[in-house]
Amino acid sequence: MGSKLGAGVAAVVVAIPLLIGAGIVGIVSTFTASSASSTSLTCTPTGAVPGLTAEQMSNAATIVAVGQRMGVPEQGWVVAIAAAMQESGLRNLGYGDRDSLGLFQQRPSQGWGSPAQIMNPTYAASQFYQHLLAVPGWQHMSLTKAAQAVQRSAFPDSYAKHEQRAQIIVAATQGVSCNTTKADAVIGTGTAITFRPPPT
Image (cartoon, rainbow, N blue to C red; front, top):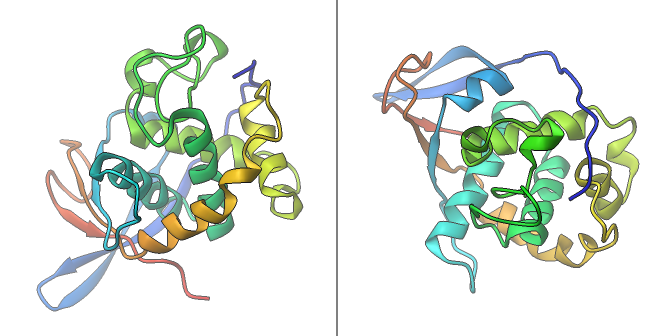
């Protein structure tokens, strides 16, 4: 992956539904790159996709859950999944080209974060989405152009081949259930969260 433009993106404040007993209570959480670096979501998808391991599905579920939490449209989840499929095969790799690491093969030397941050799938996904949201008109681009605007790959058209499968994976992760392990998270340590797709 090539060099990236560093960009500060404002915190996104979203309402997260927390299941308590039979009722649902809305909790407001500020989810930023800095908070994501100390937050780890462990996600279990409700569906399965043939050919993908439990690790790959869990990583995909985390990517989708982070997108939901940040208020990213579903189209963005598909772009993110396709990018991660191309870059790492949806595996949290501890190696890559030069200093590239993690699901999206982000590079510490290019301002994506520390190695430890990038190896946190929650942080890595939030960084991808923040850069995607900073791309003017990304929603009107083809998937491969939108992904390339973030990734700056030497193979700019390589994301297109993953689009259909990425859509299937996103559909399989709808209603994903996640746990957070951040000690000071708003929702509390180990609290189960159900991320639901926004109303259409």
